Amino acid sequence: MPVAIATPFQTLAEVSETIMGTTKRLEKMEFGGTFLSKVSSEEIEVAALLLIGRPFPRTSQRTLALDWRALNQILEELLQPSPELLRELFAQSGDIGEVVHQLFLQSGKIRQSTLFTTPLTIQDVHATFVEIADAQGAGSRKRKTGLLRALFTRATPLEAKYIAKLLVGDQRIGFSEGMLESTIARAQDLPLDLVRRANMLTGNIGEVTRIAFFEGANGLKKVKLCAFIPLLPMLAAQAENVEDALKTHGGQSAFEMKLDGARVQIHMQRQNEHARIRVFSRRLTDVSASLPDVIQLVETQVDARSCILEGEVLAEGKDGRPYPFQHLMRRFRRVRNVEEMVHEIPVTLYLFDLLMHDDEVLIDTPYSSRRERLVALRGDIALVKQLVTTDSLAAESFFDESIKAGHEGLVAKRVDSTYQPGKRGKAWLKVKRAMETLDLVIIAAEWGTGRRHKWLSDYHLAARDPETGEYHMLGKTFKGLTDVEFEDITQRLLELKIEQRGGVVTVQPRIVVEVEYDEIQQSPTYKSGMALRFARIKRLRYDKDPSQSDPIQRVQELYDSQFERKASTNRVGKT
Ligand code: AMP
Image (cartoon, rainbow, N blue to C red; front, side, top):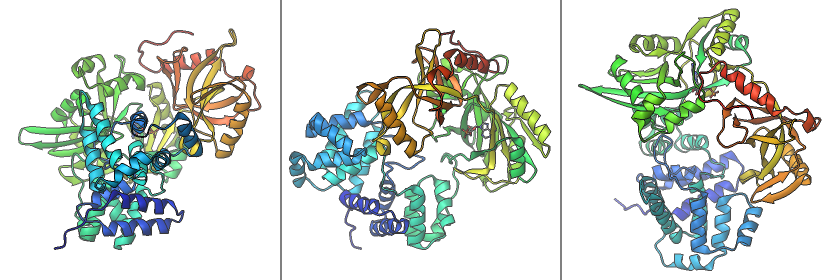
């Protein structure tokens, strides 16, 4: 058997450049498919992942945990670029990969040394990424940067570009995971649905690529849902109101209360006396270590050999009202002294779905049967409150009940719907209480990065105190504007510029914007003690001047009114 020659990382970088060079989807797929068909079975998993700009599979718990600062430090050590050159390169391109590429091209030093080292292979790059991710504990940052420095020392300018892109997670060649699925299907003449399903079940597009290229349709058909590999959560689209939801669902929906907690997917497998249980967050991070109480509850209550459960974890006060989301997050971030936290912030688990039961996969089973089976096996664990109805009045009063109890609203679920991992479709519709928008004033703005690097695109939002004339910052956002609006507002803000420090331009407070948000949170950072959660600009209000914007006192009132429905933590006082 001929020995496969290891694929140089340079080849992958060149293919990526070719893919980036065309906007035609079919051509992109052709280039990607041809490349993948040439790599060996040992390399193909890594090749596929790196091609879509991922160091690791979606379901992997590995993260590089190195940021732009670390990259910057290494570039400085290796290439000593002048600040002027860096500034100029950033002004030309907001793409960090391209900046690194140019820096390498303009530095003879590195280039010469690469002539004498062995070329990097895709396996080398991947193995180094694994080592970087696995470096933990004391001294890990030094070890990580050391590994990365060694990698850059061996890289050609083009390779350095793609290493940097992988590092910062910004690939930008227009080749997404979805396009890779289509590429695999086309290249191997397989049904796209089969490829998609295998990817959904394994959460590892690299592995799916290998199976598709080396085992074909039969291999893909054998792919099964396994406990301990988290599935992407199914998501909900937005509905205007309960009536709208009922109409979309053909007259009947199962309405569930929408709890403002943290979503969890719980995997359990029992063997003899022992139960193995892992809890994954919405982003598929393993959060088991911070939730020993949830694990114990599942172990003692759930009547099953194996299962995958979904639910929401909520922190509640003594009166049963939920604490603000922020409070709960303190539990999730905690890795040390967990036991203390379990007492300080007790949590309640509310279940709402069952995706696997005793090794039987249920994602293709209708919602109503999944719920029935969930009811039967959950023991004493609470279920998310549910109402199945055709009556919009009944649904509306259920909505009010949910809001009064301090929750976010409802999720309407189609009773015959299957569970579609990762999809935000109409089978699930969220109905939320509309938050009153706020008219706020822009007091500063930051130059954007990437695609937005030519614009002032991150806006500091503030509310005025009419009594003192002072502006109180409540948050930042870059969300909500079109490209044309970015362009326009950048010009206007520059005309109002007071000074620039770093990338932040302070402006005269003149521009009013209408802002939507999910919640007003307690903030240790801002002087007002309040911050907007998920702020986004709804409209530019050039028609308003700051004297017509919402005063800080109104923000405080809204903040206080939120707490009438929530359990109380230490609330901020008046500003
Ligand atoms: P959103 O984050 O606004 O897109 O809403 C989706 C989120 O609502 C999910 O990820 C869950 O964390 C949360 N959620 C709360 N209650 C439910 C429920 N009964 N069913 C599904 N998701 C829920």
